[in-house]
Image: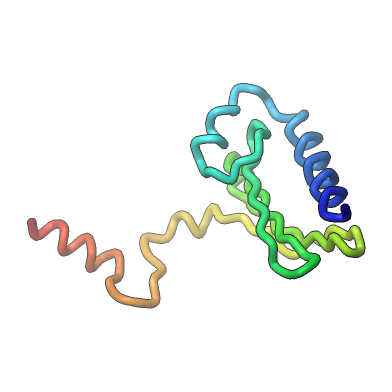
Length: 112
């Protein structure tokens, strides 16, 4: 029952956020990722991270920002855990800690 209430609260937040967005971006979020939730500009994804806890990730592709919330269904609380602009992350050419590095893959492909 509490899970349904938390889900309804999350749904309400996303619907309110979507209400302010223009309808011209509808297809973009749907093409971006499968976990997309019908809002025109935002992409969301929910995963269970504990017995009574869900993690809600909301991504705004236009602003290149993501936010992570923890939803406690036992207490009915929603806590903002992190917000990050990923604009500069997407500017990096590579960031791997194990082989093959992107430049190594590129070099292998260029040999053909």
